[in-house]
Image 1 (cartoon, rainbow, N blue to C red):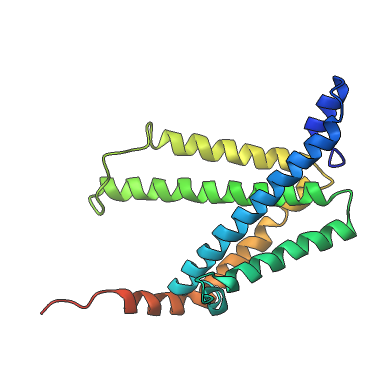
Image 2: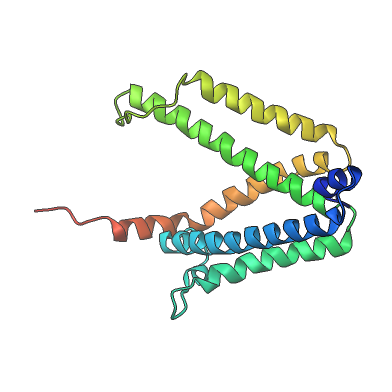
Length: 201
């Protein structure tokens, strides 16, 4: 359950003294480390996206010590939403966050597999050059991976309390992504045009 770490449950069950306190310290330290690395990576990813025109401009702002504090502030704002969620539904907050994160990972990998299928098809048509390091078993590998990930979504759907509501967010997220793309595509195209080297005469 979300009330107790599985490590604490196991170690307490086998009689390890002070197991709960030690494991809570380890888990909290790991969580803080994960949050710290998340702030570092998302801050720089948002900076790169802002430079490419696909993220808000303020996320590309750097401090004097070259820290992308605009992206870090946006990431912190999202973290605060998690605190608010925990305040409103403390018994379900952990499961909600876990399901939303899973949905993000699943959708990302499905899109990667679809992109790779398109890439292989274009390579076979002679439009792009395929590298020497290749995915074994393509296109079967991509199709099996997509089927497995969609099966996980199906398992989430069976959880009526949280999982099904999370899956129902997919159309909402899809609409938001499409609207976001139409909102930034001109800026992205303009930025790409500026970065493209001038043709030689």
